[in-house]
Length: 188
Image 1 (cartoon, rainbow, N blue to C red):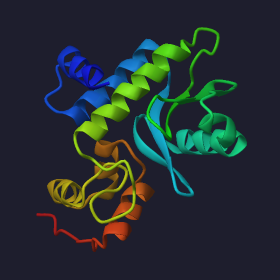
Image 2: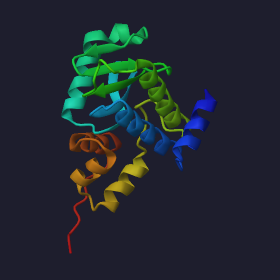
Image 3: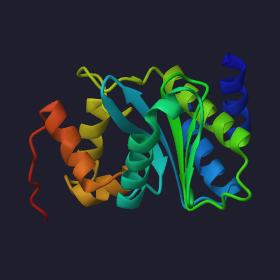
Image 4: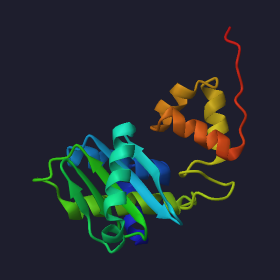
């Protein structure tokens, strides 16, 4: 398995494993002609977003609906396919790849699952938590990284959400989870 990540790092020219994961998802979106590609994980009683490209309300709702309809099948390693969306187990326990807006007639499930596995392993290799509890991370974001990004963008939540590829609500949720008070910056 380690070779998969090393190959991904080399082929993708990524400077860090997180970038390799993101580039893998971007490549999958392009290769599979998907509108949205995201990694999800099930831990405890929660099905949660790990990382994605073009993640919007449609993506969040679609992945959650597929999970709620077939969690048992997914946990047994069987993909779920519905209209123009698919939720596919990766080779890493309790991690799943969600594809939205994909042509299911041309969908290569093996390539999708392998790409999702590479992305999950890249995140894990970087040492980012694959769990969402504890003070060290939320959906792969470290508290310090979130604070730095908020400061860089002058606490503009919409801009930070765009940069991170998540919704504004997600940013607010992360701030609440970490106990980060909202700062208001005077614009000059």
